[in-house]
Amino acid sequence: MSQQWSSELLAFHDEVRRYNLGPLWDVIHEIITPKPDTRVEPYLWKWPVIRERVMRSGELITPERGGERRVIFLENPGLKAAGQQAAVTRTLYVGIQLLLPGEIAPSHRHSQSAVRFIIEGEGAYTAVEGEKIFMQRGDYILTPAWTWHDHGHEGDKPMIWMDGLDSPFIQLIDASFFEPHKEKRQPLSLPDNYSVRRYGNGALRPLGDRHHGYPSPLTVYPWQHTVAAMESLKSLPPDPHDGYAVEYINPANGQSADPRIGAVMQTLTPGMHTKAHRHLSSAVYHVVEGRGRSVVNGVQLDWEKGDFFTVPPWAWHEHANTGDGDAVLFSINDRPLMELLELERTEAYSEGDGHQAVREVFAPLT
Image (cartoon, rainbow, N blue to C red):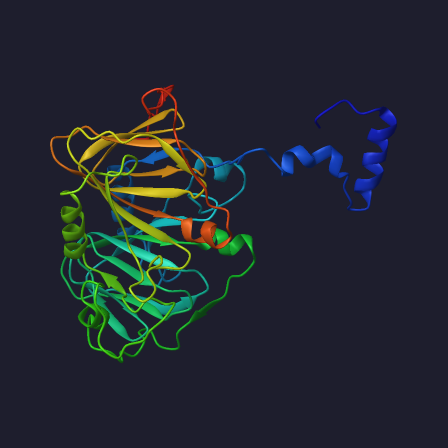
């Protein structure tokens, strides 16, 4: 309540609410805020903590016995306290999936968009709409909404990857559908790694192919192509806020590779310290290589290889490489959604030298 109301008016509020109605004047400053008022917290998850639990889950549960997927997900404590489960931001979910040799994660499809970033292992594959895609460390793989997909492992070592979904957003708007395939594995109708053979690095398209829009005709974005793109950028001045950064795009239309989930890979060279900025879109980062720190709304997050951290919407953030080699960060975001809704905005930090004051150093659970 923004002001003191008379006893008569307070009694009227109670009367109105008994009929499942509400007085706007009593709550307008809570529902229409002057700037985003988020429950999402800047937070850091340490890789050794995650990996130990992921590997332990492999001893206790199988994909068949565990609801089709063996996954440990990240949960933002601010959203958890507000009653939102399995969400790292209001719109994004991140899980760490384990597949052991010989296992199959059964085929299904759902309304949620899903993207994958391969963290470690070899010999496993994901099949998407009849295409078998072998996973390599650093690959970025799309699973568009309502496409059949399953996973299998033909190698001899554990396979671990990051899943990113827009499930919190889909849950918020009550738009979830799910369907299991009648077979454990979908039938394959295309050659292995078909999309990357056909589209190469995404810069050229086969003559006669007039694919437009979504889904992207490129299902997998190989690590070596991403590295080459980042290395090429190093001959140019870095972006003041993101260093040397590339975005995964749909080669058919130049937009985000997935229409709801954006993805970025960025390199910070030794000693690089980006300037702070903020945007409405929220993001979740995974440290691919190196070590460093990020300051998010005055909270310093010290990270190293394997860690995950989150940047809430409209939060000032900057990154610094504190190691001897390159620091490489992969991130997913909800920018495509914000742009579709015409809500996205960006602002550079204009105080002092462009860097925030650190008011707190985050102490991660270890």
